[in-house]
Image (cartoon, rainbow, N blue to C red; front, top):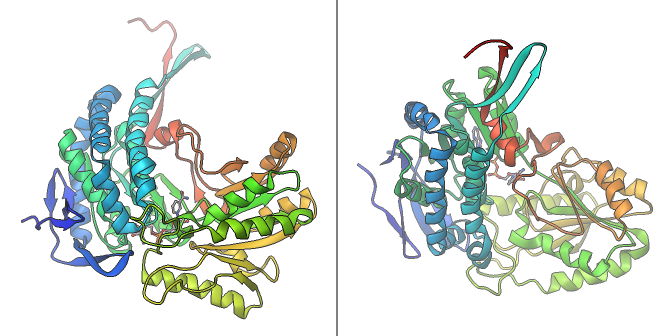
Length: 487
Ligand code: NAD
């Protein structure tokens, strides 16, 4: 028996799993509360276990042959219908994501939810446009085919649930794989709405399955299932290691988009005002952004002017309820996460780092943490070397380009970097020298969906985005036919 839907800001949301085209309840549940007001319980959500994982993989495995046989064009039709339904339901999706995760409502309504629709459209069209590579060599005709691989497990984190789920599901489906999505337990609700829309769009049962629950429980069971042909995780390096171990046992191809500790490098020849404004913008979404440039590296000669501007822009931030258009800094996701952020700052103080601003909660009774700036004692400080994932930036200076690159490359992460400079030559030089999967120069967060995306070092394994994601989700096959073979 499916559970009753719960009303969340006038939107009816199922707290159940979605498996094989129908809602499935679990006896056990877990509580989901709103970061906007921790007394506000949103739902008791189904807590999947090994049996639920088995049910979902079985549904995905059974649905696979038919979905694969539909070909890119047949799949694109269904995916486009889903994209249109997403665009028709932006307001509902946005408000549920907002109260569940506390992302700013205005940006959800204006950009983020629609980006989910674009993910489905773009990957559907990219799969249709694929040109097989065909050539002759050594007396044979060669042909490279993309073959659908099978059921794919997709595991997503809590910080951008809608964006990341759609970004990761779309290429898997377009490539002809069936999907089991395991959203994060701190923000699982928009995924449930996605299941409703997929149902309405006419996805055959079992093509897209949503399994709710705790990572160490149902997540671990999913990635151990040997019928799974692809695993794609976005999360922390710690989870990346655990999921990678399971993938290694079954030799299942695995991509991991993991944490970041990106540098934001400002050279003296840059537009300092623009750089300072962007630096203060790293507090957006309460700093819970893997790509954020959280380590500010500023050329010594402009440090004073830069900091003055940075403080001015940071002062302009408005902490508050994410539904209020005036708010620019939302609360943190969860009290446990608040304690984690506080722990980093407390340890930094104890270690002799200087907390220049913030360093405490905004109010006693909410999950807001003040935008915080720390000047570390040295480059070995924990606050420089480890991802905080909150509104906490560090600030260091450098005297020349070589030192800037050395500092930028001095952590084990390598997801992203931001560079501000007025010189194209320097942009090319430093951009090449900095170790990160994505580097933005004089801009931030501009993404072309066809570009490769992923991290170096402990920031990830493999690349997603565009054809890279479609290749990952396919079994590439080379067919060689001797020339002279007649038809
Ligand atoms: P997390 O690693 O704790 O959890 C991520 C997901 O993995 C969740 O759904 C969780 O339930 C699941 N999980 C946990 N343990 C598991 C296990 N043993 N087996 C299977 N699944 C398991 O990460 P989080 O706290 O949800 O998210 C924050 C992290 O994600 C940060 O490190 C952040 O930088 C990273 N992140 C990276 C990107 C990127 O694109 N590289 C994007 C967003 C977030």
